[in-house]
Each structure stands twice: as structure tokens, then as C-alpha cells.
Amino acid sequence: MIGVRRLDEIDRAALLRRPTVVTPEVVEAAAKIVAEVRSGGDDAVRRFTKQFDKVDPPTLEVPRTKPRLSSAEEKAIGEAVRRVHDYHRQAIPKGFEKTSRGVTVGKTMVPYRTAGIYIPGGLAVYPSSLIMCAVAAEVAGVETRVLCTPPGPDGSIPAAVLFAAEVCGVERIFRIGGAQAVAAMAYGTKSVPPVEIIVGPGNKFVTAAKRIVNGDVAIDFLAGPTEVLILSDGSASAAFIAADLIAQAEHDPLACPLLVTTSAKQAHDVDIELGRQFPELERRAIIEAALKGQGALLVVDDLDEAIDFANEYAAEHLVLAVRNPRKAMKSIRHAGAVFLGEYSPVASGDYCVGPNSTLPTLGDARRSSGLSASTFLKSISYELLTRAGLKGIAPMATTLATTEGLQAHRRSIEVRL
Image 1 (spheres, rainbow, N blue to C red):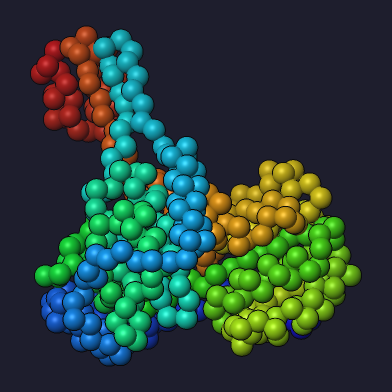
Image 2 (image 1 turned 45 degrees about the vertical axis):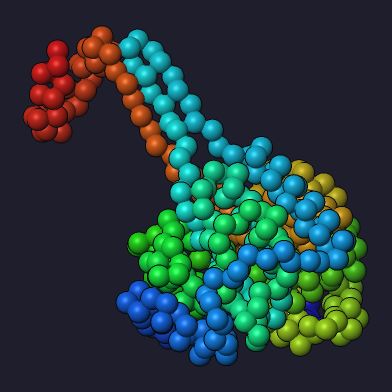
């Protein structure tokens, strides 16, 4: 289906580049939308909603209703919220305070007061993405969470998203998509309150808009098409590996599904499985485009070479389908999330086992972490000195002030003593 080849320097360079999504043309278009929403408010939002979503809803804000799903769906969403809440509650960073000889130093964690959450619409429904963002914000202590998501052809929002928002306690919901949603949350309109941080995945125009408003509002990170990199030593099931590659490929024609294995036979078996599994699926056209466009089945000499490539690639999702995944994990430095062993499919992370599935792409895992409660927290350091404490640190501080040529700094200490 994809074809098997050895990983060489040409492949390495090509794969590390990733698909170009946010082009200058996309940035220019997004900047125009952001500027018009910033100056025109609700009128501009409505105009772009009508232009891009082909709908003119009676109100931008969704009235509070009691959406109903099947009992199985409601139970699944409730369980997902509980699992994600428990994970983030345990992982939340804590402040500290320490006192020694009249000098108290510490750090306190302060949440953003308001957060804007963007959830994509269109070809799929993503209550799981909303849960990931909204629960992390709630655990961090964010007071107000605002949701923007594109309306359907009839102006409605999927019932599963509305139900998840209700369970998560999201305060306000708006049927706004694209760059106009990012701009509305960043700068505020008559209907949409301005927020302090914007999070959540979106298309290339959403990503471009987040980049543009980042000087005025905090963001999580800039997201591109989804990625999965599977490392194998030949021991894992070819059917399992193919299923994981296909699962990520069905997100987007620009998705990046990669296998790096030490076994040429396994790579050939996976190629056969891909051809067998994906044609029967509803989103087969999207899957085929991703597999042919960015997919690769690559063979390397040993697992160390595979791990070196994984750290260089810095995948959004990294699967360690090897005999001893915990040992291999110790050598991983750059990844959004890691899935250990062949019975840990990426979809388990997508569907709220606990860790967040809103993750850095495009190699940004070399610099960024996935979305968590920490995303919604700022640390503030503080210090409290008694007169004795100030006297104790004065020789060090005044010497350094003199060394730096800052006389007023030195005097601000000496005047107190």
C-alpha cells in the first residue's frame, strides 16, 4: 500500500520537514479576518459565519438546553470526564515556600481567570477534545470557560458536544468557527467575552489566527495535522500497527502515519495489512490520501537507530511497539505522548483514559508539552525579608550591584540598614 524502504538521509530530511500548512497566503487571509472581527465585532463574525459556514444563526451564543444522548453515550462521556479529571488533579503543579535566616522565598500558582476553548467541527464530532481542554482548565481553577465551535448547516451544535460541555460545566457556548472564533475570543465582541488564554485544535486558519493574536492573549501551542510514529522491533502484530496508522490517517489527508521497524518482514506485513484494512472504512479517501502523501514504512538496523530518529522527529503520538517498552521509554526525550506496548493504541489516549490528547505537532514536542492543567497556570515568585534577613544578604547583593554599575540598586538596600 505504501511501500517499504530503508530509512536514509534523504528520507530523514523529508520527513522532518512536515507538511506546510500555515502558508503566507493562509496567514494573510487569517490576518484579514482577525482585523475585521477586532474592529467590527459581532457583525463581522456573522458575516464570516455566513460566508464560510453557510448559515446565519439567530444568536451567536447557544441557548442552554438539556441535550439528550443514548444512555451508553452519556455514560461514556461521564466516565471520560472522571478519568481526565483524576489524571489532571494528580498532575497539577504545586507552589512552595521556604524560610531561612529571615529570608522567605516561594512560588504560587495562579490560574487564568478566563479561557477560550476551540473545538473543530465539520467532518467529525469531537466531544473528547472538549473534555480534554475543559477539564484541564477546571482543575487548574479557571473561573470562566468559553467554548467556540462551528455550527452545522442548520446552525446547530452536535448534541454530544453540548452534553460534554454541560458535564464539564462550560459556562458559555458560541456557534462560531475558524479564525473569526479565535479573534472574537481574543478581543471580545458584544456577544463574546474576551479571554486570557485560547486553547484547542483547529484547521490551518485557526492555527494562523492563534499565531496572530498570541501577542495579545496566551495560547497553548500551534497545532498542525495529526502524527503517529510507531517504533517496533518486529515483535508486534502487523494488524495492530496497521490499525494505528489508519486510525490517525482518517483525521486528515495531511496526517503523518509512520512506522520505523528493525524488521523488513514486519514492514512488508504491515503494508499488506494496510491494503486489507482501510478500503472497508467510511473515510477511506482521507486515509488513502494521508497514507500515500505522508505515510512511510521504514526499516532501520537496530532499535537505537529507531529511537534516535524518534527523538529527532518529536512526534505528536509515539507508539513503542517493542518487547520492553518501559526500557525504550527511558531513551525518549521528545514526544507529545507515548503509548507503551502493542495493547496501548493511540485511540485509547484520544478517548480519555486520562492523559491529554491535545498535543504539539510539527516537531514542536522538542519545545512544548501537551495541554494540561499547567497550561492554565502561571507561576508567581515572591520573597519576604526581615531586617535581619536583608542584613544577611546585603554583602552579596551590594557587591553584585556595584559590579553591575547600578548605584541606585545598592543604595535601595543600604538605606534600609
